Amino acid sequence: MDVVPDFVVEEAARRFALLGDPTRLRVVSAVHRRGEACVSDLATDCDTSPSNASQHLQLLLLGGIVKRRRQGRLVLYRLADDTIESLCTIVCASVLERARILSA
Image (cartoon, rainbow, N blue to C red; front, side):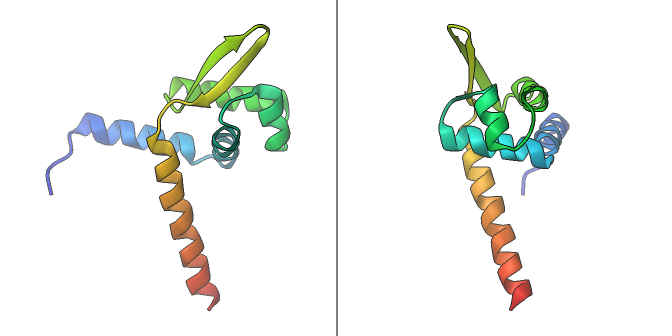
């Protein structure tokens, strides 16, 4: 296995930390499910306040996980990185498989 440069390891750790928060992970899931959505819709989907959803979206934006665009008065968010969907699919499948094994 090749040695991974330190800057790659550090950036990967930052990305995993962003996705390690349950609310942020719910927001990412809701953005993925909707394709594109405004803060109030995401807050409703995630059972949180618009203010809280907005704070999580700001962190995800700074981390390059989501991007945004303006449509009139609305700010719409969507996934910025196609690999996030694959990563979440792999991790969720692994968690479900582990739960299945443990419950058997």
